Length: 204
Image 1 (cartoon, rainbow, N blue to C red):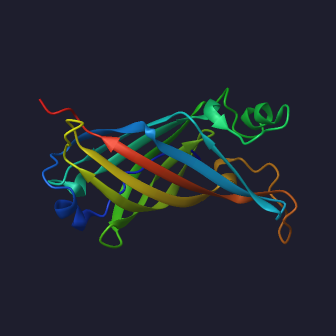
Image 2: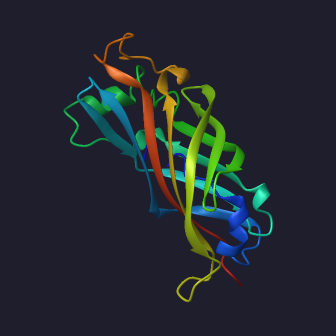
């Protein structure tokens, strides 16, 4: 998916040295530097790739309190972006059998736990709400860097990459899932990739 959900997603032990002097604050996703894409198996022949164009997220974070980091994110389902869709295909995916955008226009994610796995990596587990169903989703996150402020912008900026997967049938989207032992359909496992930068509050 092109933000879900971004990422509250940081390697807690390393942050103090990598991001000096960033006071705990609410950072906001920079939509100009964020993407969510997803991939799903199609007939065993390819991994169909698409994404979302409109999403938002906030990240509560500071190097003085990294253990309190928390992410909330929302995706506008109607912003589904498909590569060269045939006539009617986008409307079909946004319809009741798939994303059901009219009834469930927003996908939400809230982080629950952040577990460091290395100097710049962490596992983030949270609750995703889609199609009226809440289910846990886990992603592996890499902290790419940041600064407390720069000459060209008077606020903090930090960036992450995240990768994960989910079962679409766990959210009630089971249409087209191949029967056991077959790939004739659309796979149940959806892998996603997130690139996200967050910006903080302007310095006075």
